[in-house]
Image (tube, rainbow, N blue to C red; front, side, top):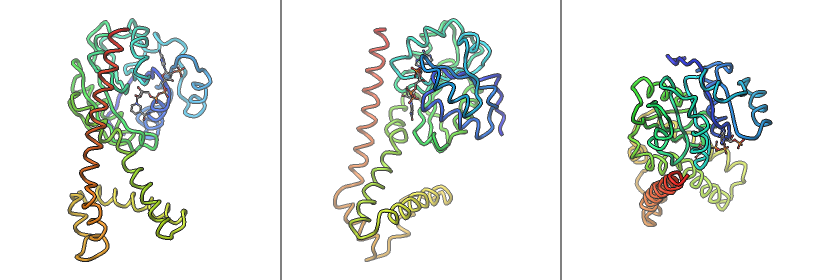
Length: 282
Ligand SMILES: NC(=O)c1ccc[n+]([C@@H]2O[C@H](COP(=O)([O-])OP(=O)(O)OC[C@H]3O[C@@H](n4cnc5c(N)ncnc54)[C@H](OP(=O)(O)O)[C@@H]3O)[C@@H](O)[C@H]2O)c1
């Protein structure tokens, strides 16, 4: 348990990312369930399920519950953000810290929708937050202070790791770690097919591959070595790894992966522009 001190955390939106954050905060004992209040728009049964599962409080009145909390987490879909901020704006004052996981909505859009100068921090977690292994990046808005950044960092560290980047780099984060789990799944998918083609059964393939991915990640993490160095260490002249790497190099796979990340980054930028355009119209 770190230095995390909060009067209460209010979730505006309690969908899949909201639940991942709640379970991370509780598992790491950052907060007790009594200090977490959840809200949504129209599905009371979802809130009841989260209450039964985690013991968190269901909001009875968003505005007064927000006034009692010091952290407000925006975990709603991008196109709902303007209406949602309009609804809660009267309850927000300068003592609040607003943390948004809403993809594509800039800190500026959020700041301009609120009546006071309040610290806003934008975050890009990835789907591994569900198993408390997210790679998250956060970006402070105009009014964020070092202590609000530290608080947000601690909160996201409860469900994985958390880095701080300039907001202009969030599309790149989205392309790299936001989309990142899918790159690894894609490679595992291909390896699985390869294992089957080479004669192994599916269960054995899955078992061996899961541990291979986990082990490679652990090697990178525990040794702190460069991936190229780790790869060189397992590549002996005329050996199997060298034969495999020759095939990958000849097909330009490294270049293709770089292009995929660049395209995802560009797509994140395009989506942010679409969202800003739509929000300005609302
Ligand atoms: N899932 C991920 O891994 C991930 C990763 C990074 C970023 N994100 C971002 O996180 C955000 C949420 O994603 P999600 O997958 O958790 O979405 P989700 O499952 O659809 O949940 C959205 C929630 O927002 C609620 N909501 C909408 N308007 C509201 C309002 N005015 N007041 C209170 N609650 C309101 C919805 O309530 P109702 O159901 O009652 O309408 C629902 O509970 C998105 O912007 C997404 O881009 C997600």
